[in-house]
Length: 169
Image (tube, rainbow, N blue to C red; front, side, top):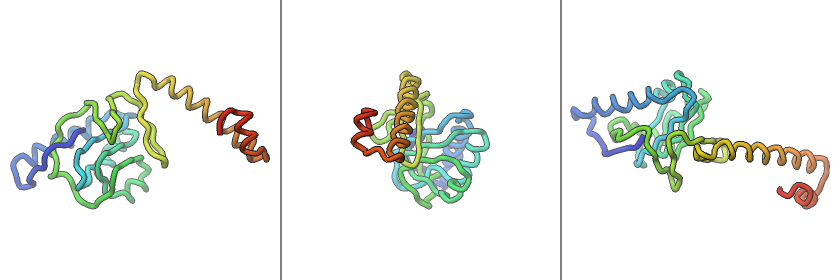
């Protein structure tokens, strides 16, 4: 999703705008991650009802270059959301949907439809679809090596010796 100009909630275009957003929410495929580039830093673009809808249809999570509200509910519901900021401000009338299933830029990172996105407490990584399988293989190998290092250090191996043995730390 890409955001657009603010819409007056009393205008005739409000109903049209919210309908576009609700169709967009309903169109996120099961197993996919919703990625929203909101181009606005005032209000929430995701909240309890949107998350409930996405989760009920098997959407995997959301990366949001914008605001989120109802975060306690979302966290307790176990739906992964990565957001730029948190705010109680509703957004429905502040933006208009411009496009879906198009490349977006979040920060300095371009996200293409079909890219793999991985997020945890440390942040979010975007992996281009064309190299995703290779990156996954390398990441699994690195994780396995780090597991070996962890065991070795727990068993008393000094960090420098672990580095020399495994070639990384």
